[in-house]
Image (cartoon, rainbow, N blue to C red):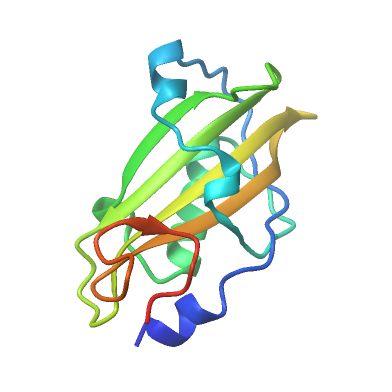
Amino acid sequence: MKNALFASLPAAMLLAGGSATLSADDSDAANIPPAVEFAPVQRYNITYDAPRDVAEFYLRDFGFRTRDAEFQQADHPTDPTMLVMLVTVDGIRDDSVRGVQLRLGMRASAGFWEMVEAGIRRKCHRGENAGKWTREVCP
């Protein structure tokens, strides 16, 4: 069911929404993998009032429930005007994909959060990278 969805994900993301003040400490930023470890995802021209709302939009778009996801937020490692949200869904009931992570880089703009960077990586059940996060589509 989700195999076709995951095969077509790489592209790039765009806008998000929110006007909340957010912060994270350096230890949180150290736990967020760099953008190069994620394949680009399609961008959407959307806005929400908070970064988490943006992340929830993308989860729903990929067919996941927010209650199945773990959200982690940190300051961007190189741009102090941005934040990064890592959204993890693990334990997916699929014969190929075991887990998915979204890395969403956002910047506040005119009272909303604008999507600047976005990507996805998967954890596969089989293949040479089985059980490890990879940019590649699962076999």
